[in-house]
Length: 368
Length: 107
Image (cartoon, rainbow over all chains, first blue to last red; front, side):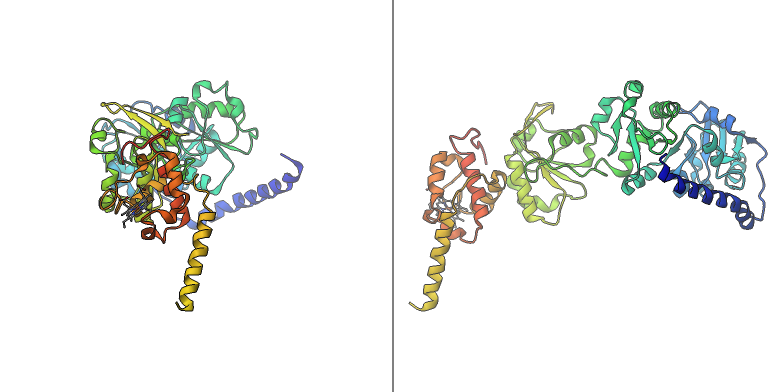
C-alpha cells in the first residue's frame, strides 16, 4: 500500500468500526422477536468438509437467503439457492434420498431463514438436517474463498471493476468459447503460468471459473491462488455453461466486424459455429442444389434470388450471418437485407471461401 | 428556348462533365455493387435488356464502357444513382469480369 492511500484506508477502517459498533444495536432494534432455533447446529469445520466440488456423496448445502441480492453476491461453494420464501415451491430441488445430509445456512446468528427451512425439511421426512447457524459471514471469515453468481460477475464487468477473470479449463475449451474478458490459465498449468496473475495481490480480485457446477478446476485454482498470497479470490461456479445460458455467447462481445463492411470476423464465426451455434441465425444463400451437397450444419437455406420475397420470414432475435461459397452472394444478401430491413442492426456476412463435403464438413478460408 | 431550360441544360452539362471528370472508377465495394446491380439494373438486364453480368466483358471493356457513363444506352434509366453506387457497380462488374482472377460463375 502506498503512503498516500493510507489515510483513506484508515478512514474506511474507522467507518467499518463505527458500523460494527452500531450493528448489534440496529439488529436488536429490528429483530426483537427471537425465533425458534433448529436443534442441530454445525460449525465451519463441519461445513467445510462438504463445501467441495464435486459435491461429496449424499450431501447438499442450501443457501436460504434471497437469490438476489444475497446468493449471487456470495455463497458457500457448492451451495444451491433455495430461498426460505420459496421453499415450498422449490422442494423438487431437494434430493430424492431422504437420508441425504442437508445443511442450511443464511446470514448468520440473527438470521432465522435457515432454521425455518430446516424445520420444513425435517417435516418433509429428511432425517439428516443441520443448520450452519453462523452462516455466510462466518464462512467468509474462515474459508479461503467463496463462490459468486454470474450476475455479480456481469455487474463487475459493466462497472469496469478491478478484477481478473481466469478460465481454468484446458486451453482448447477456452478457445472454443469463453466468458468475455477472461484470460486462460488452465488448472494443470497453474504453476507455469502463475506469472499471468495480477501483480497486486491485495487489491485485485481474482475470479475463477470453469465448466460449471460439477467442475472442480476453478476451485482448485482458487485455493492455489490463495496460497500464492492473493487475498481476494472467488469462484464463479456456474462457469461457462451458466454464462451461455444466462447471457448467450454474444454478451459483452458483440459480433466482431471483419475487415470488409458488414463482414463478420472469421475466427469468431467459427468459434460460434462450433461452440454455440444457437447464438446466431446462419443463412446459406446458395442454391438449393449447392446447399444439398453440403452446408454449415446449423444453416438454413434461403437462396439469394428468393431473399427479397422471403425477407419478412427471417426472425431477427439473434444476429444474422449470411454465407455462400465465396462471399459474393452472401455480401449481396447482406446489402439487400440492410436495404429492405434497415431497422435490423445485427446482420453480417461471411467474407470467406467455403468448401463443403456431403456430410457437412467444411473448410473456411478467409478472403484476403 | 426559355432561360429556365437553358440554365437546366447548363447545369446538366456541368454535372455530367463533373461526373466524368471525377471518374476514376474502381476500388469500390464489389459486394455492395452486386446488390446494387441487382436492385437497379437487373429489372431490365436479363429480362427486357441483355443478360449483362460481370462475365459479359473483359476488364478492359468494362473500363472502356464506364469511361463515359453517359454513353451507356440506358444511362437515363438510372440518372438518380449516386456516383458512389455506380462505382460499386462498376467495381463488381470489373472485378469479376471474364478475365478477372475470380470470374463470377453464377449470379
